Image 1 (cartoon, rainbow over the protein chains, first blue to last red):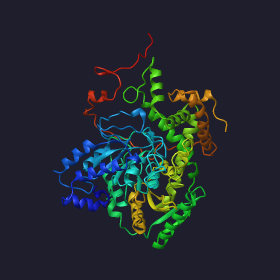
Image 2: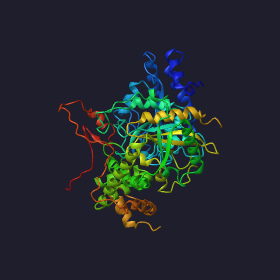
Image 3: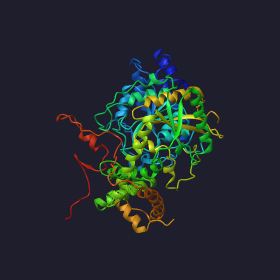
Image 4: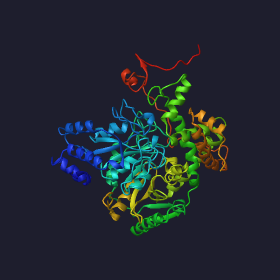
Length: 483
Length: 98
């Protein structure tokens, strides 16, 4: 089997330009690798026939950009025309979209080739991949551990080097947490940087699509490709999309960086805190100015998320009624019974639990007691972040409280998936950009991720720091070698 | 911890347009209580009545466009994923009483 997909992007690109290889070689290699790594269960639907056809078509097209002909995996909540999009739910098991999401149009315009749709937590609700209707995804660093979630398959596809690129979505940490657990680079862009048109809605004020890649350079390239104003998403921003890769080699000496005390508390695994402290020393030696600070309201992020995300989810998922699309029950005597039975059969347990809470906090007086109150605290939390960014360029800390843990240990704990996202949720609440960067391993050689949070629409500053750390550490991040 | 009563669970499921099995009712009674206890933390926070809210972290402004007819979806595409159809229509159970 060829191994072109383990080469750097620039090497692959130059081989394509020099006609040493064709896009078809890359596509066939990706499918070989999927077959070889079948046990990881990273994909729900493969796009084999169409991908091969597209690759052959590209043989007659000039290689016009760095992403040309490169295989990409797409999370299965981003809709793809004529290619099933299930959200890992029985509800949408046979859903075949009639148009492409804006990000899909954009990656197709760059002539990237979609290999398949990746496994995930059902409707992006979960942090382990274990809520998928299509079974668990395994962590390629240790197959008895969770890959993180909800963008589980996307993280695994990149980590196992099946595809160099993947798209995920992040509502409370769903790009960053699995990226951290699988040793890859994952970014949640600023809210509005990337169009959400065609992303199956979970919590509309928190959701963002983000790039998941092997390296910072590749992440920056993919972000640039998918960003920009979209008339079909009025929350998308018309701010100019920078040339992110031009920022990668910049000097980091003048950066002022904050470390929230909350991110280094006893709730965080000690090995992870030690690793982050090592990075802090490294940056201080390089000349960065680093302070430990307090940020108000961070400790309320989880209850805020439970109210706001679940309220929005209950409203967004009200559309699944078995009529226009999605699962329909076999027998019913009234429209009400049709709705209730179709939904009860179609949704899994995590989704049911979340939409019940969401419906509850929005019902009657609760809308004021919980939802409105949460929105007030959300404003206060955003004000606290804005104040930090008056003085500092970046905030850093761990991505997660721990490393990837064994499959199945907390499937019945209703709070677990929220507390996994303790350090990532505040970023979604504020709409800020944040990246998870692999910075080392624990004693059992499981990857540790560091989170770099930037000011609004300042992804380039995040990349600046991330590329310096990546280059300095020079870690071997190819998973599965040890088996 | 004491969970929600079964009646409360049925009420919440009803709000979400769900019917639950007996087993689910028991399980959710405890789990929903766990989450609701967590959520109660924000009720205790002291915050001014007139404090502004934040619905989404974006600057909302009005966007206008010309009132021009543009291409829409094809009927066959709209019906593609519907479970029950009849001609150009989606079939649903009767919603009005006799």
